[in-house]
Image: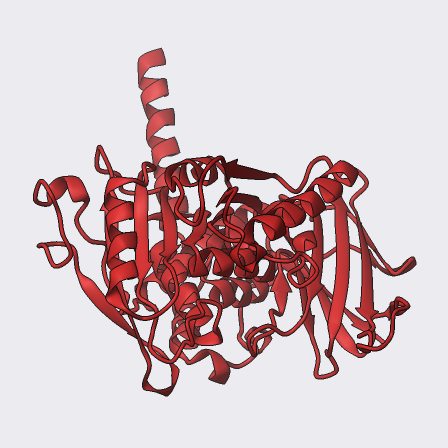
Length: 452
């Protein structure tokens, strides 16, 4: 009798699980609308609030909704120029070379008919299917093939961590600069493809470079830090006054430079940059993970192995409880999002500075948003910052940041600007997922504040 009853309970339980798994959170029409929206070019997409989507979700419903939307995104956003993940090196010939079977040399179409040639290689033993690391590897200056093929050989022979290595060749027309806006667009494309189709962990994406590629690391990491877990600048160094180290609060940073690498004051600038990071970390012990290795007796040629190992051990936190964002235009681009803060508005000019922190215990968010004055060249006195105005500041929310089932209080520039509960929203999930192509950065809700 007991055995029969237990069997009945198990059957009923399995039936209920089967029903739950087969029930999708979107109707057929809603799903079609989501797919159509994803397929639309980003600049032509309507506001997701105009779609008839469920916008009062529980935590469990939001998690399931994200899974469904992410599957739809992956099914409808394959970038043919970036392509599929290649075979691993262990599956190729004993000594793989460029052009060997499985080592596909591809081309990305950029602006103004420019092209970026690249090679993707995969170092894995044993073969993995998910949670891969992605390393974007940039070489020295110029579009000539020598430095590109050298970087490829370094990735094959010297860089030890397992993962996917994307090694681009500098496009003609880039002016020997990896930081150009069209190259930034290429990195974004590769990262999004890698997350959606290569099994790359979005929290294990790394940028590294040598010489001019090192300068790119120095400059791009502070500009777009929330894309990366860490970066490794090799044989380079930049002045911290020109590239804000404050933005690296949540992105680990490593420099390897020779003690005799004095051209362009590389070693001097690298030391100065890390001294600034030392000061920032002293005031904020949970942030600003960094390391500098000055290689004794070395000039511009150094040992390139240690830094890549160091960065590979770092992971990104997509929802850090504190952030610092010094924002300005760089190479014709301006970022509109930094982790969980977004700023929009035609009035954004010059340099803005946003500091924000979230306390999950008290369920409060504190923001300071300032407009930093641009000091004239002939002026020595500091310019007093002003409260940021004329923009919409959006606070993106996630259950890892605050408790969305409780009242949230937001203070901006010492004034309470919001107090209440916020509903988890499919509209916010869809828009933030598509804008970054990164499910771990998809917000479940948002609070928009108009700064007057």
